[in-house]
Image 1 (tube, helix red, strand yellow):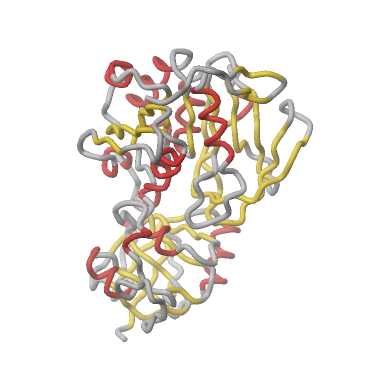
Image 2: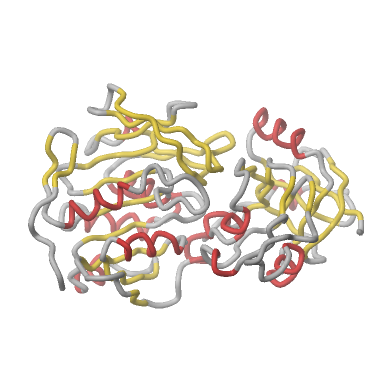
Length: 372
């Protein structure tokens, strides 16, 4: 294997071996702690503009299964400790090296990913380059910024996906970089899902006469999405809304709140969150799948109340807006790959679309819905 380098913006260099595409790249280096789910990670549009490093030491052992893709590959690069070039899995379509070459994504193996993870945890997320030779001038690495990320990964046009079984509801899914599992989970709830590009206006959404709106995950700085925030502001209070990840952050901004960048983010399938019964007292703890580098400043959102907090660092993981008919979470309840502890939130959304009420901190199902 050919030698290659990972060069951090502070000048630290790590020698490894190249696989994937034979190209140089610059991106924001982040780590994810998932033991499995690397296929879903590589196809999650929320990683747009980033070089993804796996903390689990062996990657590629079960190959790449196209049926498990969450979307189009948007990562800038990939870093692992040990790369398995001989996967063993009856579902495998190809090996990891072949897939990364197809996608034009350069990768490195043989690096000390534990040391790299410590550096990021101590110093925060930083830019990095994957290259054949460490550059003498690091200005291009230091100056890299992720911009226009949502418009780069959203769908080009509207599409409709039918409900599984009897249709109960019609949902407009705003695609800010949506994982396919979100639409699949809605379909399992009996929802016909109309997927709309991020450029769709509030009027476009309301003209569809949906029963509810799903705001998807996505990449980049949430505050950059001025148009999308304004459209959500126009929808709040007019139709039931459920937001996930970036959708959670955009809703908070639309409600007058603020967001901020985390030191190194939450990425992995083992993130504990605590549900709050009334915004203060603890109800239950769930293990969740997460992928985000920004968080909501809960104290800045006057229109809602905190519904979940991160058990590790206390950051906001969910908001309820009972007066606006909306709720949002920072984690991924569809969780592919990852735990399914919080899939009940899709049932909560169905209850809200069904004309349910917000009573004692719980959405109670109504009688609006039915076969369509």
